[in-house]
Length: 311
Image: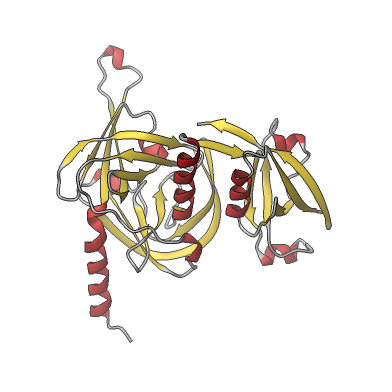
């Protein structure tokens, strides 16, 4: 059995190995009344370098900023450029200089409830990376913030405060398995992180299309739990439940309903939110997605056009 001193030493070593990859982001957002002499509004966030010259943060950290400055763990700083922003995933790619050590990216599909995790960032704009520790409390969360709904999130009890947004959620191997986000100001004792595999998908879309785009059909969904399936007397125990259909979208016109359980999209079985999202993105060039839906105990086949939004 590992001793408390050994555990403490292991955590300290882990933090030492990854802290240089974490950056503080200072933003200047034009004040609405700047014409009358008001100064820009200063904001704070975090991010992390995942590849030489490139870092990830939250979209809400840098969106609307006229100027961003990144501060490294050694106190040096420089202006940085925002390359791409996807507000639907709350992710942004920024270009940074210097020879900052990249953090390794893990596999968020391997994350389990109960895993020990660290949230590293700059809460409240305090200098230098701060570290909080907790466990993964739940997976596949769908939450609503201001003007945004985020799906398939990792929930943790590691403290995540304003300023932490955009920093890495790190596993016991020192790998980034999520991007912390503090978009829910009323959360008490719980925080959320965007899975690192969603970041990979964001970067892949940039490589494929040269810009961030959103491929969707107009639904928000949540993972179907086995408990919920029993309570609803469903003939399936896996899938995603439609919790909202956006009026005027392809899903609305195809008569997808709230409460429908999507179990297949294209050639892919849908067991988690990510399965549906990736199936839709994989069928962008086809323009439509064939869904298998469970409704009132019956299986239905519904073809839904894919809508592309420029972001």
